[in-house]
Amino acid sequence: MTDGIMGKAATMEIAINSNGDTAGLPEDDSLEQDLQQVMVSGPNLNETSIVSGGYGGTAEAIIATGTIKGSTNIHQSQSGPVTSGEEPVRGIAGEKFDIVRKWGINTYKCTKQMISERFGRGSRTVDLELEAQIEVLRDTKRKYENVLRLARALTNHFYNMVQTQRALGESFSDLSQKSPELQEEFGYNADTQKLLCKNGETLLGAINFFVSSINTLVNKTMEDTLLTIKLFENARLEYDAYRTDLEELNLGPRDSLTLPKIDLAQQLYLVHKEKYERLRNDVTIKLKFLEENKVKVMHKQLLLFHNAISAYFAGNQQQLEQTLKQFNVKVKVSGSEKPSWLEEQ
Image (cartoon, rainbow, N blue to C red; front, side):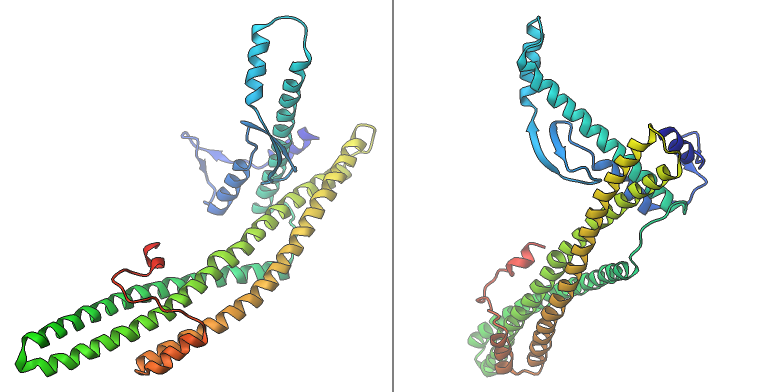
């Protein structure tokens, strides 16, 4: 069976130049990234991992190999018949070999399926409605990231303006005491700058709250959903790889040699089908709750942003303070230090 599969895979010729680079094919960065992910998801040979058997899967149990070295030293220093102490060593070595073998087979099948899809030679399972929702989410995340970037830039610029107003107010106040002939003019300009500084700090509190909420939505809530989507896409690739393998076996002869292979392929197909359907259901549920949460959060944050900005530029200090109380936003006490979240950027 392996020879047959390799024979089919070898029908696609890839030109190689003298430096070992592929020639005559268009560059495909996404294909290269997918292939890299397939290769880096291999088992850790420094530990014995009992893996759930998936492309990009995680270890269910880990057995430290520190005991192996000790047992090996004993074996080298003593000669004689095999003792019971050497049996665990052979068992761990056998587990390692089995893990590597399963990972190699799984990686080969997934890589073969991936390349077949990219070159239009293989079929893939498609859920048009779900994939459209996933693409909308990715596009929405990019747009929200741009809003977050601009809001942070606005906060930085506005913070600098408030600090300048504070320094200007202090300068006016100092000059009013040292210039008797202009004391009144410097005095009311100092009071104006201090009032603007106070209102600016109140608005900064509202903008900081807006930025913090958008950051949580984009980099935590949306990112968590995209992580589940990535697992779903990996499961889809595995499912199609084992589905294709089963279809190829069913097209071949049925005898005493092929029937056990068909039965095993059927079992693996059902396992990966169940995993694919489970993750598809998880993605559907997360997308639904994400949309509901996004609407709820953005409704509150956009209302806060609008009311605070409008009240500030209208010079309505009372309305500005009332807006922050309405949304339970606490304003930090005036100081010379920047807001803590800005220091983390």
